[in-house]
Amino acid sequence: MLIVWELVCRLFNIREFILPAPSVIAKSLAEFRGPILEHSWWTLVTTLFGFGLAIVGGILLGVALGFSTLVYTGLYPLLVGFNAIPKVALVPILVLWFGIGAVPVVVTSFIISFFPIVVNVATGIATMEPELADVLRSLGASKLDVLRKAGLPRAMPYLFASLKIAITLAFVGSVLAETIGGNAGLGFLMVTAAARFDVALVFAGLVAVAVMAVGLFAICVLVERRMVRWAFRGELVT
Amino acid sequence: MNEVSPAFVELRDVSLSYGEDADSILALESLSLTVGKGQFIAVVGPSGCGKSTLMKVVSGLVLPSRGTVKVAGEAVTGPVKNVGMAFQNATLLPWRTIRDNVLLPFEIIRPHRYKLRAERTYYIELVQRLLSTVGLAGFGEKYSWQLSGGMQQRANLCRAIVHQPSLLMLDEPFASLDAFTREELWFVMQDLWLQHKFTAILVTHDLREAALLADRVIVFSPRPGHIIYEADVGLPRPRTLETTYSPVFTDLVHDLREKIRPGQPN
Image 1 (cartoon, rainbow over the protein chains, first blue to last red):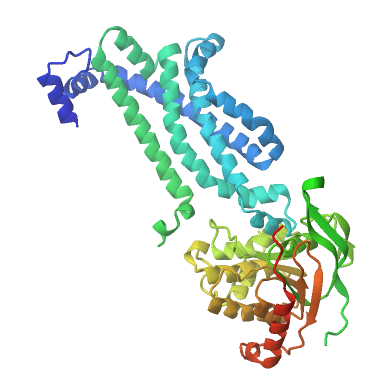
Image 2 (cartoon, rainbow over the protein chains, first blue to last red):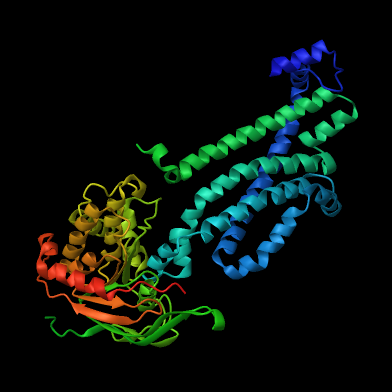
């Protein structure tokens, strides 16, 4: 595919600020590797920060939703409504509140990746087999016991499945926020490059984002395999 | 035939309806039932007759709309403690080994839950011994999904009785098994009961199963469920597969079958 891309660019003589050829992008990557690395690092740190907050917040709220019907009926519609808001629209407000810099980036990354985690954890807990709850309750288990012994472990595969979605969303959030309200990071780098019509550098930035997102996705998959081996059943029978 | 034993489970004039006012469905109607200590009774009836509701009422998971339930002489106001339960679905926890699944009741029941950590080897020993009596020796380290349905159900029975419950509730535990495995597990169940002599209530659709395992078989009417017939099973124990072909046994099953009328669809 890269070859086709390269050929198309050369054969049709497409100008560099419309679509740079892969070789040009590679050159740009090499030339600006210093700044790209620096900004990648910044993006990585803010994304992981937002993602980390999303995991903690998502689990807590997800457990609360799955555990109590009252919280569920009260909060779930609100959450759905909030999630329906395009996050791009929120970034200017966040910038207004927190100023240009890392905070709006972390917050955007958090709110965008938080929702799938909440929904999945809540689903995992709420879909527990009623018979299982009956067995536990007739042993004298409190609601908390049921949650600890059955609800939480049961929700783990749901959690890890949602993390795979959430990590890519976290990158979307941070890069998005950087393009609007950042003073560092790949999103910021790309916007400034675009302003100079250095399209090759914009694409180089995209490559860097993709590499990081795929890398972290792979890490999530690895962690998932380690933590919830049982959920894969037959595949891992030894 | 049955010696007079003190009542362990006592239902007096129990009715239960689900739902509110106009939409409510009457599941049980003026049900009175006494189960003696150490007795094994079976409840049979057409589907949807409130048999499973009876289980919930006796174990205190659902409180009756009317009437009183007493277990071990005490009125039931919430989930009865120290009950063992087994359902058609084995509901083993897939993230635990079979051994840890059977260990689960000890993690919940007081005072075991406080002693478990210190005396873990003792409890594990206990579980292993129980597992081997049902033919699961050597499977303790396996996960439930690595076992066949019949083996899962054996483990499920172990989990239901490992803590020596005074009351065992069985809700069609053998219904999803093939005929041979089912018969095999009847005798596993009988052995466990003969050893531990807990009070047991079995809900089933299988009349042979009911007649083989129980001291007394109770026939429910279509909904709203009430008792229309009771039969004492006088057959000596331990009963064997041969028992099920004896004329006394087949007559009893025949007799029970005639009492069961299908539920009216309304």
